[in-house]
Image 1 (cartoon, rainbow, N blue to C red):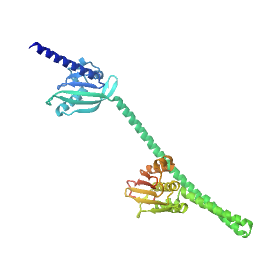
Image 2 (tube, helix red, strand yellow; image 1 turned 90 degrees about the horizontal axis):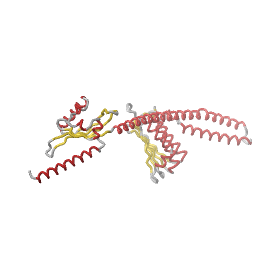
Image 3 (cartoon, one colour; image 1 turned 60 degrees about the horizontal axis):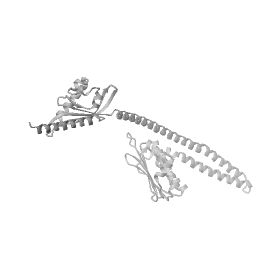
Image 4 (tube, helix red, strand yellow; image 1 turned 90 degrees about the vertical axis):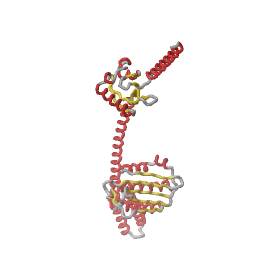
Length: 375
């Protein structure tokens, strides 16, 4: 061998050594554990993170197998995984828990086969990333999410109880106004009428009695309307369809706005809670027509689509900015909450100059085939 050949070989060996040292330096500065095994399972190379994970030095690891480093249970599992990779040529990826001196750690492990340019395997490489903190964060987040879900369920339950209590209170007030206050006013009207008859037409008090009689009648009408707005007895007695029709007729009479109401034929019965919800949505929507729409026509359409029931309230008014009103209006918030508690959806479609459509859909209970009366 000539001197030139020896020099060339030494330069090659020096370059290989430099490359080896550079590779090792890169691996040692990596925050993940990296290792290399031969096909018999002996360790050929490890980095410092692998040493820290095992608590062993490089000298204590290289040339040894898993059975000489880890517990028999872990070594056996590692061997099975390595053999599967060798037999299939497929990479392996999994999250694994390992015991270390400072406690349990969760690692994301990725193992794969190294092959020559011709595809011949010559080593197994493994990379383990410590994801303990991420897993802990995920656990904390999951627990927080579960607590939030429980709190949301409690809030939904509370909201449902509050709405139920509100409707019961509305029903009580409506009944008291109708059965007590209005009956007293009716009795007062009869007494005024009787007193008026006992006096001659030219008596100076007669005119005052007539005015008082008229005022009592007007007050009685106002209280009757207020009682109806609180809770219409027709909703309990005849059902949603009749209650909505009465609501539309009264709205036309009081507000002077034309209302077209469409009710499906052969309507099935629905629960009292659904009927009350849809009635309140219609009631609030009509209030908003008066407050915001400047409309001349309103259309109410009640439909049973098989899986549930829908109510649409549409007007030909000036429309409005939906986001702005929804963020300020407690009425819309209340409507949406009522519908949501029944598993339904509520949408408001409106643009300035193009009218407004409020649409609510509530599913029928799955165990019942149920439409427009209430039970």
